[in-house]
Every structure is written in structure tokens, then in C-alpha cells.
Amino acid sequence: MTDHKEVRRTLVVATRRLGTLVADPSPAAPVAEAALEAMEGLERILLAHFHAEEGEAGFFEELLRAAPQLSRDVDELRHQHPVLAERIHSIVEGSRWAGLSDSAWRKVSVEFDRFVEEFTLHENTEDRLVAEGLMTDEGGLG
Figure 1 (cartoon, rainbow, N blue to C red):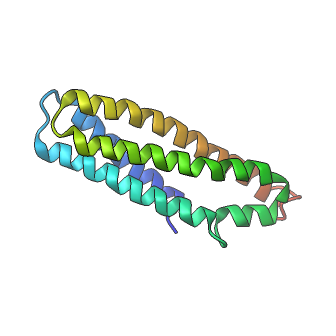
Figure 2 (spheres, one colour):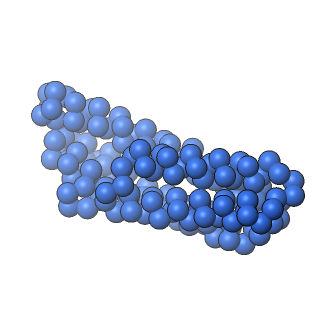
């Protein structure tokens, strides 16, 4: 299973590579290729991460076993996965078509920034649920 550290590390790499690309008004092909590779890598990591969280022995099932009262919150997180997956896929597709176009990469960057905000909120919600569910007397670990 991909852990949160790996996801965040990959997100940081993608953010840096995209930032380097967008900061250059005339990006070179290797810089654009590195940004595209980072976006593709992030998509792969996220899809594996989402799949692992939703699996039978995944994060969501573990959380629900410990704190069944959080089922609505967990369902909401589950519903966010396909939305987030579609957003990162759209960003990857935009990256594939951007080539060396500064304006196209700027558009990708804006979409990516929005994605990062949404994904960060999603991960923060997961962290909060862990604190509420797994670290309380009701959840069995506290």
C-alpha cells in the first residue's frame, strides 16, 4: 500500500517540477518532460493509494471497525476518490498536450493548484477522522 508519506513526497516533487517549468518563460523540452513524468507518477501513486484505502483491509475498513459512528464521513471520503482521480487525470492529459506552450502549462498549473487544495482538504479530513475515531475511547485505541 502506498502510504501518506509517499503520496505527499510525490506531490511535492510534482509541485516543484511544475513550478520550475512555469517559472521559465521559454521552457526546455527536458523540463517539460520532467513535469509530465511527475504528473504521471503522481496519478499512478494516487490511484494505488485510493485503491488501497478502499480495499477490504484498507484504511477505511480499519477506521470503520474501530469507529462505526464515522460511516458517513468515510462514505464522503470514498466518494471524493473518483472526483480526485478524474481531476488528476485531466491534469495529466493537459500536461501531455501542453508541449512547450507557456500558456498551456500555466493553465495546467492553475488546475494543479486547485487539485492540491482539494486533495489537502481530503487528507486533512482523513487525519481528523483518525484522531476522532482511532484515538478515542469509543474507537478502542485511546
